[in-house]
Image (tube, rainbow, N blue to C red):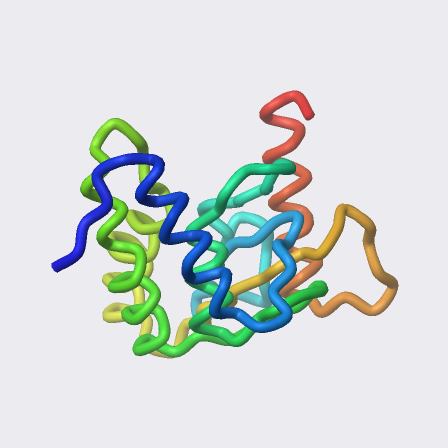
Length: 159
């Protein structure tokens, strides 16, 4: 199995994969939410990991999820099946070889969401991509909930 042991190798994989995504434009933020079957709807708390991509920063999990979902640009949400989540985990797993860097997306997808799907098979997995910080009037509930999670993260980090 391929492994990436350095930040440079992870950045190279990001660039390689992004280069295969025709029309790809990196989002401002992205994340995957787990919405339990008994939830009244998507909430900010359903998004365990929020990724806000600063200019020049690489986000391999975002490129991987874009590859899996078909996302290329704009603000959008995608419902994921278990198989799609497993594919994203397989694509991202080689990054775990870089042990001095945390891998919250991989760990959340593999260690939280997969087991949670086993106990709540009617739950929904939603991948959300935000093109910009700007809010649109017609955002889907999943997008609005993720945007709330981004705002909470930005406030926690002092942005």
